[in-house]
Length: 299
Image 1 (cartoon, helix red, strand yellow):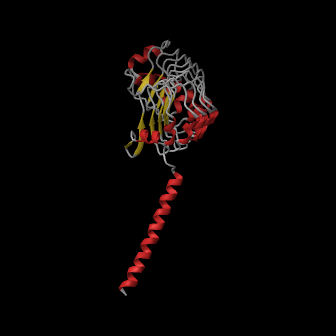
Image 2 (image 1 turned 180 degrees about the vertical axis):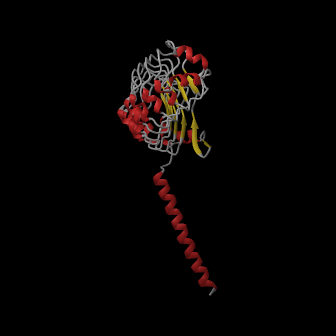
Image 3 (image 1 turned 180 degrees about the horizontal axis):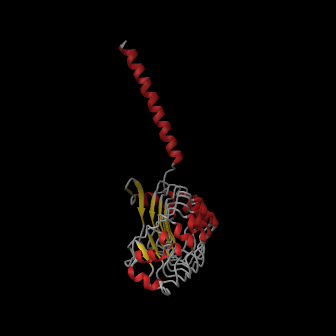
């Protein structure tokens, strides 16, 4: 009986070993072995907050090493503060990326293959030389944070209207004359930064951004604010400093989330200094936001 039990156990062990070998073999098929150069790059990856992370920031790179794109397991990639003028189509192979930081390069465009990064949640592409954004970026429907500040952008493609999960959008310091129509479809937006562009108006559709808490449009050429802006009940910070406003909508008293006149850039409330406001609004504001609201409220 002892021999039979031994043979039975042995067969079971062999079966389990066979399963493990097949599993490892399948794993190798799914993730082909890396080149020696890619392995050297992989040694610089770390696990940060549970994410596979690689930082190549401030390396003086004017191009990306071809082996980088073999590291398909990467989830966070930092290429900021280099001298990159372009990114190859191979960027699309890093389809596990969650965060991509391209801040502070010389990029004049983003490759269409960026649309293959279906898991991407954060994209920093500020301080580059971008004049446009590829339509394919609209396929990154998991994006939650998008910063395109300090570029040369004049608009956004309509495809970005599908970004229903986007909560923070920074388009400051660009060349935008009209708020892109797609922005009004981003219903999840909480933070919208459009300072230092060339805006003259804000469309009535601004009322569609019902979750908006922070709206910054300072440093533009806005002449009037639409009354629909005053229907954004969640608004806690409205910065319209340094524009061409002469008056405010009568309905502004509805913005109960703006609790005071703010001075410091980070303060919540209404920022409205450095506008050619006419009397009596200019005089009423000397009494603070409550004085303005009392003046505007119907009797």
